[in-house]
Image 1: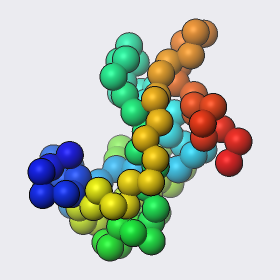
Image 2: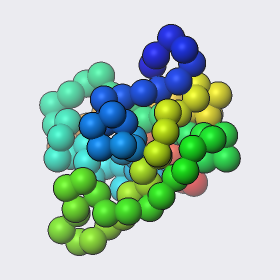
Image 3: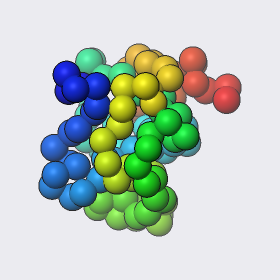
Length: 104
């Protein structure tokens, strides 16, 4: 995260928003883009603390099943992050929601 207390990934400048997922979709982009990675975490964000518009839209690129994802149209302040969860591939392959989030 940036030292100014906000998360500003390159996607914010490139496409105008930060890609996010909900509990039911976090595994989808991870299984497409991050297979084999062992350094991933999920940041749990309180939308009420973001301070920027959050819009539910098609993925970029759009998901074949028409699933929508939350996009944050501005930086995410550190104060909006209410949890950090390890995100690992399962033994059978593929990412799944960690136990710390699975029962919500």
